[in-house]
Image (cartoon, rainbow, N blue to C red; front, side, top):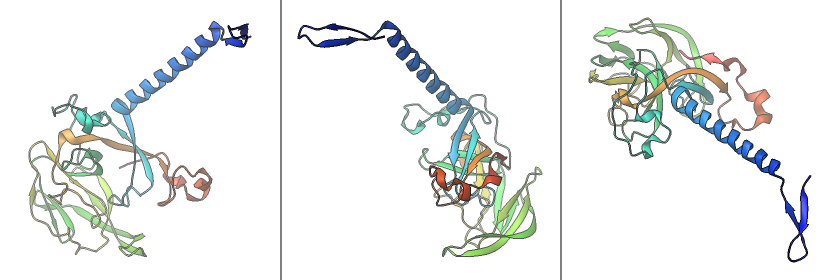
Length: 265
């Protein structure tokens, strides 16, 4: 029980028992510990991201929420939260493990070292990359692609349409889907020959005609290894484009239940 006494003005002054303060301190302690654990997990293990654009359709859709493993490539300045505001000089990576061709990875845009981008690793250091009539060429050899069922998507005018879809097999055996919204005559379907510099990687979206990626040297270009944040591992939530995730009452109709807890490849 709380104990009371009269103060100098004759009013009651409530005094809190020592046990109550101990309970408050314990609650604060647990809260601080939880925050520290969350910070460690986010910094060293897994970080959640959501997909705001369609550059990786059909692999990742707008409205997908995914976990990115921070440990996959080791740690750099950009592994830290709010790294763009930290007075830390660039200094490579610790416990580094280079990305593999075919990985879907989050990285900091080299143009500003702040904006998070997510693309697929296509070119490794020293590789020669070129798009020729819609076909990806790596080191002078066309990458195998197989036409499969058309993919239903939205055209630039907001209308439903079907576009060519392919199984693409990278030189290391990684198979993934790509789409060609503009067929094989899109703006980035015929490119110059790119030579990936040492310590850099060439990144591309699976939605080949709707992806700002390393083919655009002025806006993305080659990505330094240091700029990698982590590898996309699993979709833990997915909801239809245009439906906010916080609108729980819309979940039954708009959550893409079949995509939940699916691995990313």
